[in-house]
Amino acid sequence: MRHLPHILSALCLSALVACSGTPDYVIPPDKMAALMADVHTGESVVESNARNYPNDSTKKVLIQSIYMKHGVTSQEVDTSLYWYGQNIEKYMDVYDKTIEILEKRIAEAEKSGAKADKSMMRVTVDGDSVDIWQGPTSRRNTEMLPSNYISFHYATDKNWERGDRYTLNVRPVNIHSQLSMSMAVEYNDGTTEYVSYNQSGDGMKHLTLVLDSAKVATHVYGSLHYAARGGEVSYLDSLSLVRTRGRNDNVRARSAQRVIRHR
Image (cartoon, rainbow, N blue to C red; front, top):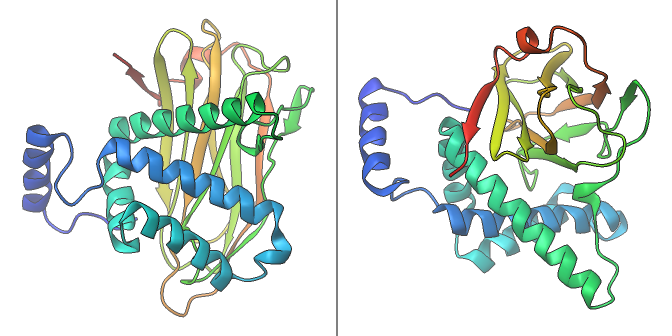
């Protein structure tokens, strides 16, 4: 992600947010959640129908049609995603609403007898140290990609335990911009914990989220963001999400994580 160019711009942005919740140039939370739900659905369609979407151009056409449906442009979406990325609590609210929309669609599809796509909520596997990643393990980055985000979401199942650790791994190759990674966990007491960072350069990157051993988690989700520059061809390789069982230093391990309490 790009940094805000000047301190004054940041101050003006803060003033706008205080007055209206989001600046005028940012897609409002409800509309953003509906848009992201459609984008996630579109990505699931692409993943399950690879023959119909053989290259980046065809995938981009699908995403652009989703943007047109919601009356937004790629630039507006990118600007909004950047703003939400800088205002993590607002981002969490949008993500929560997005998940609610997707879960409602799945419930309605199953109620009508259709086979719902639960790719966003797959059951994990058993074991003390397992890779639960369900998406592609490698992505080729170009400026023609339909989306700069790789997102994931897992709902609780019988294999979850309190205090579990989730480590997101990726090996960038030949990247020219910053790579952003974020993960969050929601608990049944209405709180969310999250951790994120931005890094540049090639080589293996890791981000670990440690669940609170004193709470019951309901969802773990997150995303990676990388925007290729013009003419760039790079890769995000060796993608994985490894779950390991908790250790005794749960509190210390979670010291860098931020907490949000929902109203």
